[in-house]
Image (tube, rainbow, N blue to C red; front, top):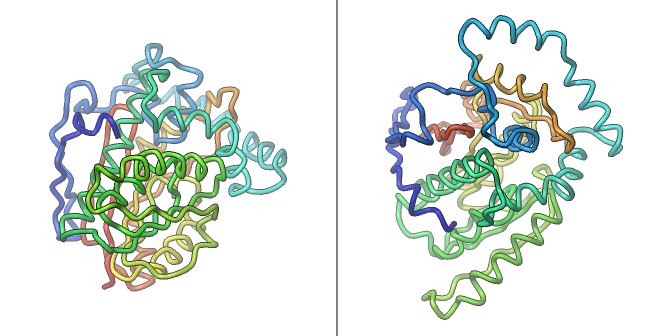
Length: 324
């Protein structure tokens, strides 16, 4: 992405599975020592809160206010809103996600993942956070050598922010997404960057294969499977199955990012649900690292590297798993 040069915060991953391994050098504007805003929640919900708040109206809640906040949260019913949303599209979480990312969600995330200046401060910060996740995932992949000829499944490719750089590195990429609108945009971006610019890239990259598919329907075998910022759409009981399925597609490595579940982040996410905005965002699910690790262990995989990517409004755990 265009701003990748400003994201040069090298990841220091450790191989010991019990170490909290990521220790980036924070910048004053993007990585405060302590989170300073109640709306610093995971990627999807944050951007939708940003539809209501422009980033300058975000309030700082002190320790004494959290007790009052908890009382307010106990009186809210975000689940009722989600049920009504599911009824509107005639299905459950998956149908809501598909509808959202083919309509209002597509327009919002196309801007966030793109290069337009028509984003507010919160959305721009999320753009930077997601780009850091992509950058660090690519670093994980290239640490062990060239990607030329390596087969990669980019499960939940969005607008191609990972698939296209992987193709430039020589990887053979299958890029899939539940949203037909996202897949069409990713393919257009790939044609613009890979086909139009093939004379500048030597040897010429292989064009990714794009397809519309949910995670459950993916098949085949790949050297590596990558799934970034997608598990946020799955509750833990379904995420376990998704992790097992993705692991079954991977021969050597599985790279996942997910919104971490801690008491603090969970509280902030619930605050965001008080302000759904007019777009009716999809449900956001947080996952504890221990739950993700257990799901991997059940299918014979172990976490080899792990890290935490944070900006002011974006939080993601990034893990690389290999067969045990």
